[in-house]
Length: 366
Image (cartoon, rainbow, N blue to C red; front, side, top):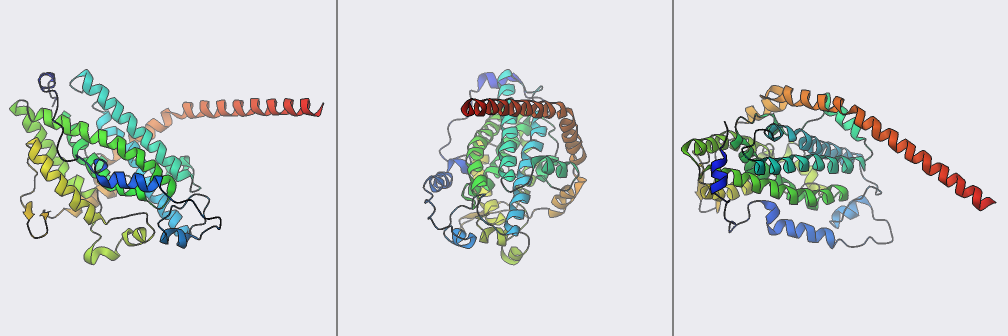
């Protein structure tokens, strides 16, 4: 179940790879950041929604937008925010059981980052006229979703490595294009989120690197974790949405609006191509007998995904669905006193400011 501290003491960590470990370390991320920094100033005349989208400019909260665009963003950003805070649970359970003080400190920092990402995203959603309390209520009542990947259990310490390497790697591949999302608050939040997620993916890679250079038992533990998390990581990109499936789901409209930049299938392919090289470097085997290089396409072919498993987990039949939501509700209820105290403090602060303003008015009037 546990990795020992012996290997951590001997192996200082993986060498710096020649290739980037994730999409946040590629030119695509740098280009997205530059595009955000170089966005042209708005003309004095207020452009229409269609003009802004056609010019690849950002839609801001003050701008008029179609209701369908707003609803799509609320759904997507809320699901993203929910995934960040639910995603604290699988690895958070290992903070007290991490094999060394160094590993505990890294894991605490990572889980704390996930909480912060949730807050960035709830704030972005609130610019669309929804309240985060309302969004959390819908999450707790099962009316909104979070990523199905977090309904799988973390059975061993190696799972924390597999989550960092595969799950965070897949998340970054999905999220780097969102740095160029047409909705400004969402795009700006993603620039910071992706940079922090890059650290998360690197720490997962390092955990697996260390285990794969340990005892045979540790190597088997790492391989077992990769075997269990590989296919759910591929499912994270969502159902097929290219070819005959292009007209299904939300992809076509989201791409027309500039919310989404690439199809699920395109991002999944890029992820597989990047991970194969890293798996070779780690020394782990990707659990796909159909995985092979296609010289003509210059990409990897890979096996069929079991979408029945994806649909079952999404519908609530995963190993940890009930546990995750029960824990989230309990944490929310336990934190009620903190929210009440914060509101009381805010009301007192506002009252003091009003008194000061009234006194200043009296002085000016005298």
